[in-house]
Amino acid sequence: NIAKGIARGELDPFTKVPFQ
Image 1 (cartoon, rainbow, N blue to C red):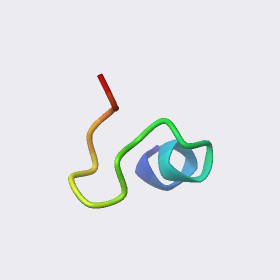
Image 2 (image 1 turned 60 degrees about the vertical axis):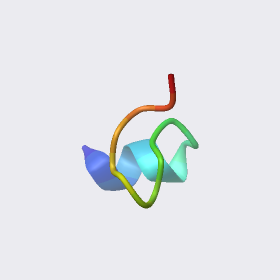
Image 3 (image 1 turned 45 degrees about the vertical axis):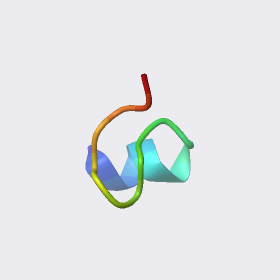
Image 4 (image 1 turned 90 degrees about the vertical axis):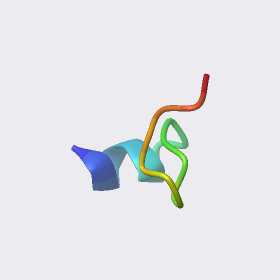
């Protein structure tokens, strides 16, 4: 879930992809 990932700080809010 994109929104959850962003909320948990796991996804970049602009590109919607995981930080790597």
